[in-house]
Length: 233
Figure 1 (tube, rainbow, N blue to C red):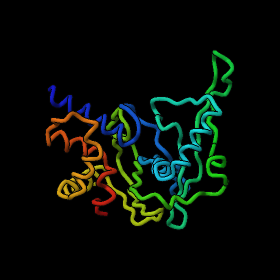
Figure 2 (cartoon, helix red, strand yellow):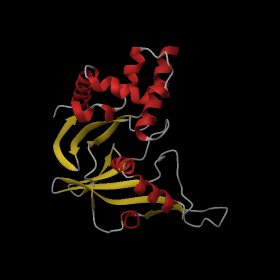
Figure 3 (tube, helix red, strand yellow):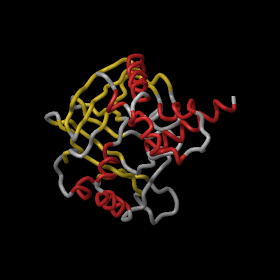
Figure 4 (cartoon, rainbow, N blue to C red):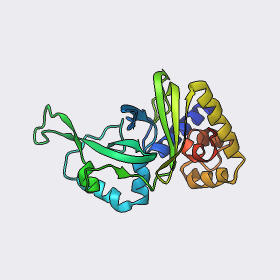
């Protein structure tokens, strides 16, 4: 029992590394598909921040103007909205929550505001041409809730592969099909050189004598390491 609990804790830690959060279910970003707003279990803006530190600094500077309402359900501090236009991924909005009347000590109200035009200095959609990754869009009813990151499970999934901002492939799967394909992708990942390279990037966050079984359980929770390269549509 202790071993299983230890692995579960490590999985939650791994989820926190992946999404920049701790063991709390997170408010997702949004992807507009067929004019409908869908939950997005990926955060492309984080990738843009990583590749463009000046953009991240600009975001931080904007936040200093307000009393931000950052909760454990959204550690990244924003919700970004994306749309695929002519087979390319664009960001179309970025919102934050602030205190509407910060001078009052009681009964202050949270207010959602858009910082998109200030962050990107335009009102037009911005091409995410520096983003390569897998967009995971849960569909239907939630069938299993996990209080951590994006680990809850849904009836169906849409997966969209993006390379340098361009849609490369897209598929829709039942939960069972998605889990089977994800497992197959993970098994291929484990046989590749990328597996050890990926572990080397995160291993310092864990105890030195971690078992191979626990190591694989941790790596399995981070789809960012393997879905893009090994998922077969």
